[in-house]
Length: 379
Image (cartoon, rainbow, N blue to C red; front, side, top):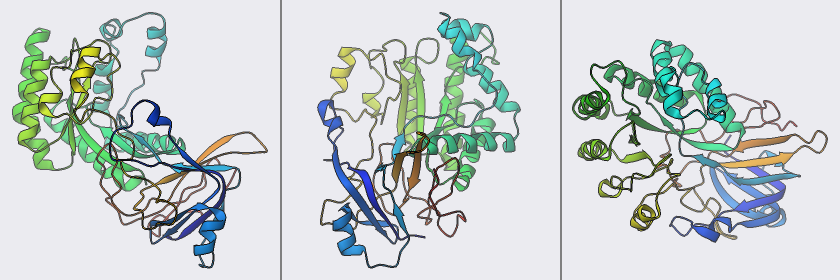
């Protein structure tokens, strides 16, 4: 089902992009259309505007129509950082952190990332895929339509290859657009011999000389991510991995400056694409990076065509509405369209399936013939 009309949306949000990262006040510049409508033909958004305008051009077509009265239609959200493939539970760590415990103290008691590594290594492929698909459904219900997914809970050559392969398999289990990142440099494994500094240097060499060649040969990962934090990997170790990644033409992301500033010595020289965890970047580092490509980017091209234009290669749109009877908020992800609308995580279209609908917990999602499902709204 690649043709659809969505009409009478209470608000339709058109996001225009000039091809650069939005900063400051420009992040709030939205073109909101009242009584909005969208016409989709052959998986491509053909028209967008008021319901009157869209139906004047496409109202005679014999296509399914959704009445979006009371709903908001907007471009799908891009989640640029996720770890959906894992086992084990760490909810108790929230209470520990709220009680004042540091990450190091949590880790010393057997928690933290390493506990997830141990649990993930022990889990079966089926268990990991089941949990990942459940996470995808929750994120999709929240309006996410493009998702960056990382490995990083294997930390051996075999386990990292396994994790990436499972993420690749998961593409067939969700209509989300998945962008896969190799995160071998997540933490320094505790099961190596020696003190921390010795283990960190040895493991960096393992990633550099063994993991990255194997990952590149596997051909699934689209990026490499590197953690640069005190107690994880140093800027110098990260630079080794980033330079090596470039030799394999594997773009780099950086986990850095989430808790303390690393003064930004690693990212720009190796043209890192993003620093999604950088909540503690120093002012000096920000100024240094201001003209670099470092950033998280929302969808890169205009998701909707301008009024009167057509043929926008949109990938997704989302519909949010509040049920007038129950007050419950529901998001429906719709219109996964063919084309090459760029996103900040560098996603590329992989499937010919253009749409999926299913009704679950009040959420409707569009379905192509390859995704048998329901085609109606529920509330």
